[in-house]
Image (tube, rainbow, N blue to C red; front, side, top):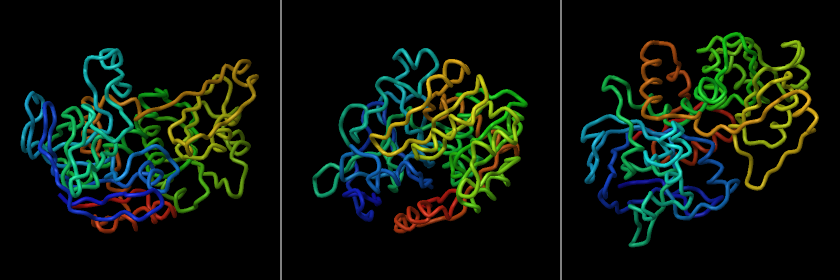
Length: 363
């Protein structure tokens, strides 16, 4: 297989020919069609997020076709088109059986291995690690079968790739985790791939107003095209005061879709009484924030984490596909540039510079 490999944080990715092992029990091999380029991979590549083993094949957002299956695989077969999930589920732990499989107790090791503690890729006899179980910056990927969710065959797989992370995380944050009701006000901090999909999620449930906050005017233009009713350029205006001016009392829901600790404080301070601040984007490792406990207690405000849009992937991925096929979910419009695998470093540069809504590596 051919893959774009990160050997050291802060260094360019290198395309290598890797050896790949076949699937073991309850695993599948997927021939990749496309992979989205995520900020989480960028943060790992530039060293903002620590603790990942090297060398590693990045990529946690993709789609492809099942090429092979291991023993015990029941719910997916060779030839199935699939969307990849970076959150495998065992189906038996406390969180899986209570409908919160994104928190599976067995499914999220951060040591670059699959669920049995080993890897399936190697270079010159030495292990190459998996990012998010799916390692989608490779032409093939071995993963737990729970990470390969089959979808209808007429769904374009290049488009479907983005459902695997940015669409699911953003839309799910609004409709699953926050459960925003019709008519509620939303403030979305960050208009990248995740934030644009939070805005879409707000549109699906008829939230209003939906306020996009960013420091990049081109991203704010994207936000308007995806359903934002108002935009705030935080490089020119105080977003907290601007949000209160628009809403009258503050936002009912605020979403942090960027990895900046200071933005969390802005999202907290813009809340109306009884408002909910949802943390999606992760700042650099070790970041902390502080806030006045009076605002928490006296105003009955809440702050909550959001992992993967609280996705129940086997239910929600097909649901996102149906919304797209019905014309209710914009995904084509998110893809602003397509790259070859050899151009992964350029894809990261453009992402860091804010030049793309979503870049897509196409195999």
